[in-house]
Image (cartoon, rainbow, N blue to C red; front, top):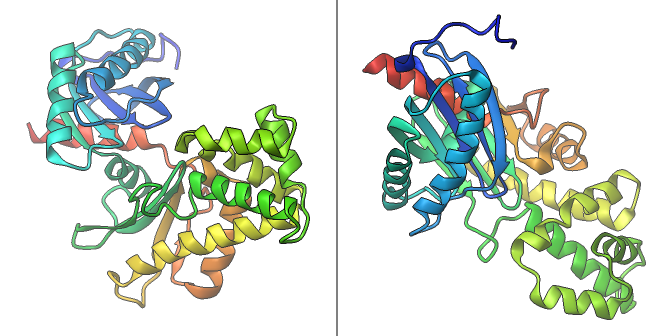
Length: 317
């Protein structure tokens, strides 16, 4: 939008929709009608207990850049934040207080990140949203407005089908192939190249100190291998799709069982064209035909969902 096209907005109508994730932060500036005036992105700002000021500092920087593009000043009237790691009230209140103190907005409402993704995907309508990034989780909103979830318990307890799960399974498959325990594959060579390593022993040393995020960063290489016809990678992706479908299956019991269920996807592993999205679609088409994934799978714009919720809050004031 050019400056000449940008609508004149009163300061009291400036809203922020914020997606505070583990790997990135996205902020949109909008008006009272939910129109996007500008947006900016930056590094992750997921909430951790006691980490409100750190998260707020990242969000403030991104919000300032978005506000500059929109030619408006902060604080905004309302900032609605969907924050990873803010599933509990204490973390939500801590982040809201830190953002208010930082001058991001006069009124700050912090919610779980999945809530803004649901708003982006379905508005106020019922549906199921499945997210596969570093981890995995599925959320449903039923016709009565209630929220239900499956998964999302972290790499130690689950997150099956997510990035860490894919990376961990690729490492294990490479090790088994190296030892002659399973069929040979190109995964070991691919992982060594991706990590800048030379030998299998190098990979062992790398894995001994790798963080969950570093292991999850291997997932795109697994998807690329599957896309290029690597058999073992394709098997891993099929298993991941099965795990994600199980999350969906656990949530369908909250619906009538007869009407089609709208479904959308989010997260870096389920972008359009992803082998994982293709496999998930195929699995659901066979076993859960009532679940209909939108054709734009992976295109959920979470900060715009947050902006819609902020506009709804403004109308209530």
